Image 1 (tube, one colour):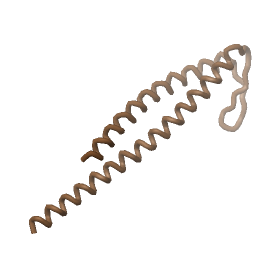
Image 2 (tube, one colour):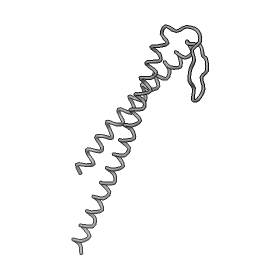
Image 3 (tube, one colour):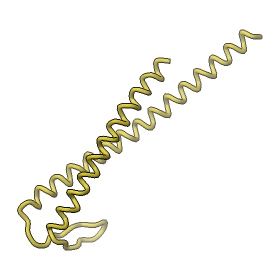
Image 4 (cartoon, one colour):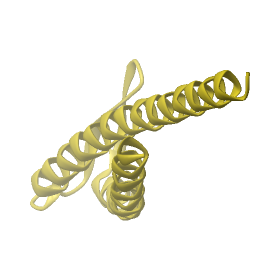
Length: 110
């Protein structure tokens, strides 16, 4: 009877370890998708800033489902600010992904 209990406990621990690994893997997948989205937004903003370098006066900006004219200098400031935020988010997310990748490897080794 004690042997059956030990086997049952072992199976339960294995199931818990598998569940933890799956949760970490799912979170990691979502974080990688978020990283891709942030990198894409960063590149779009970078291209927009490059195009605004020679622009003076008003520019058309698409916001959601409409176009609005803004002073180019305001758009540059906004995009530059967004780039700073995105850069920080990218760095934090990359660190989180690295930590979760290590956790996943450790959980799979158990």
